[in-house]
Length: 252
Image (tube, rainbow, N blue to C red):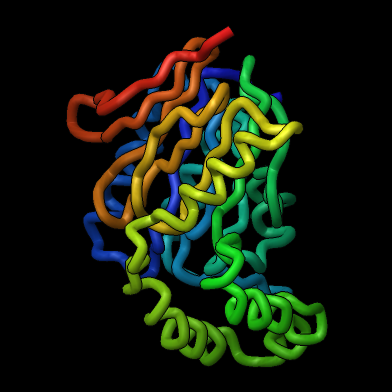
C-alpha cells in the first residue's frame, strides 16, 4: 500500500523537453510537499531511458539525484514504465532504491483500490500497430542487441526515433483512453481509482462508483494529481506550491 497523500506526475520527457521543464520538476522535488507521503511517476519521465551495464543516459541526472535524496528520507517512490522509459533496471531499483514497474500497477493508495498504467497501447484499434512494434522493442533479444551499441550512438538513435511520438498529440483529444478507463471502471472487478497518462490530456472524472484521473504532462505545464483518503485532486505546481484545479470526493 502507498500511504497518502500521494502525488502523481507523468510525461516530463526529460532530455527532449525545454530546460524550464526540468527546472520546475527539480523545484517540485526539492520542495516536495510537506504532507506528501508517497510519489508515483506514471511513465515517460525521460524521453529515453536505457541501462547499459556501466552507463545510463546523462539527461536529467539532477532529477535522479533528487529522487535518490527523497528515497533516503524514506519516501516510497513508484515509477510505472512508459513507452519512452520502459527499459529500466538496477540503476533505478538498486542504486536509487525506487520501485520500478512495467505494466499495470494494482494496489492500494491509502483507502483507494487503484490501477495505474501509463496508457500506451490500450486503445483497441488505433494502437494495434504500436502493440506489435512494442512486442519487438521490448523483446529480450532486442534489448540485448541494443546493449551492443555505444551509449552515445544508442541514445542518438532512440531520441531521433522518439521525436514523432513525443510531438504527437492524440487526434481524439484523449477520448480513446477515457473510453478505456470508463470501460474498466464499470467492470465487475473495477478499481475505485483508475490512473492513466500518455495522452498528455489531464482528466478527473467520475464513472459509476469509480474515478478516472490523468495528471496531464509535466512537459506541457507543471501539473500533477494529489490523492488522499477523502478525495482525488488535479493540481498545478508553482512558486506557491500545490494549487488545486479540480477535486472529486470519495463516495462510500
